[in-house]
Length: 143
Image (cartoon, rainbow, N blue to C red; front, side):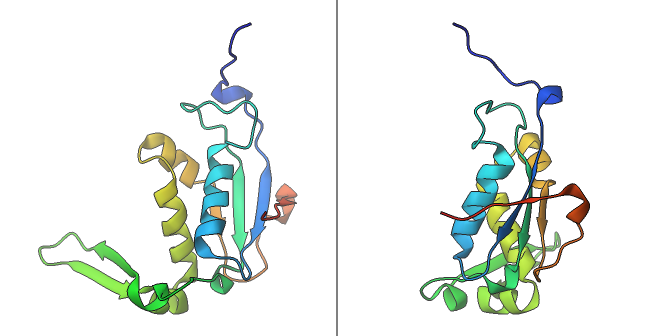
C-alpha cells in the first residue's frame, strides 16, 4: 500500500464560518489556522495547500483572558529608523478587532510562501454579516 499525496489541482475547497462571539481569541485563531491549513482533511499533505476558506464573524466580541488586554502589546515597524510602533490589545480591540484576529491566525500558519497562500483564504469581519453568502458557507462549531 502506498501513501497518496494530494496535488494542488485535486483539492476541493469548502467555505466555513466561525462565530467568534464569546470565545477566546487564541481558540478561534487555532481552529481557523487548522481549517486554512487543511489538517482536518484525510488528504492533508504538508507541502500542498489543502485547506479551505474561513470566514470569522463577530471579531469584536472575542475574549482575551487574564490581563492580556492591558499587558499584551501589538507591535509593528514603519520601516524607518526608530519606527517601532506599539499599542495594547485593549486599544487594538477597540480600533481594529479584525486585525487582532488576522495577526493571531497569521502567526499560527507556516512562515513561507505556502503560509501566505493559506492566509489569503482568511476573511475576518466585525459584525455577524459577511458578503460571502453566494459561496454557501457551512457553520463550523467550536469544540
